[in-house]
Amino acid sequence: MPARAPDAAQRGFTFIELMITLAIMATLAAVAVPMVQVAVQREREHQLRAALLEIREAIDAYKRAADNGSIKLNIGDSGFPKKLEELVEGVPDQRSPRKQNIYFLRRLPRDPFAPASAASAAATWNRRAYSAPPDNPTEGEDVFDVHSRSDKVGLNGIPLKTW
Image 1 (tube, rainbow, N blue to C red):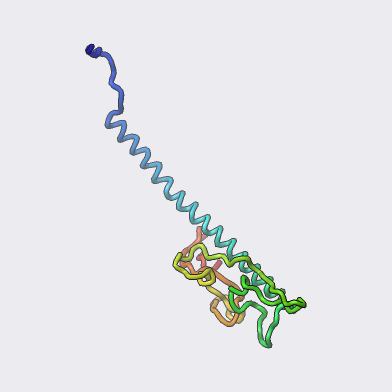
Image 2: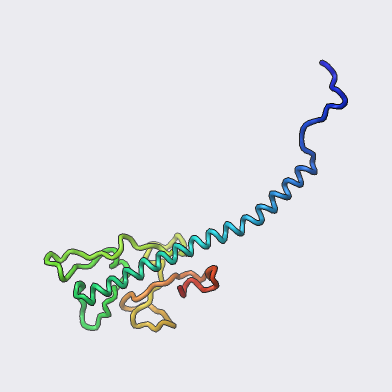
């Protein structure tokens, strides 16, 4: 075996070079993690806005159908659905000769901030009855509005339950 030439450099990294590289990577990770958390929060808030809009539009469509005589109302009924599931299950169209169901939603969206343990999509939402005042939304005989059950505050500084 021939001897190595004394001027041949060894290949590899020194301990200092490795430590500097690890320090740079740790700094980049420390900056990236909060940005990812904000992006995830923003996406969930976007899903919440979309779900609220979808449910509220369905509730308004139900009310319009009730006002037009398509949904049977009893004396004293507000014209809003009795439960959220009615928007998906449908109600008989009183103006149709065959009493076909009118459907307002294909599926009821879940609150994206609700825990996964909630049994049904309807159980993830707080409801406000038509007779409840806006400053004290409580459940009642019908569903006038929905809001999140979450106690979290949105990125805009407003609690999610007031959206």
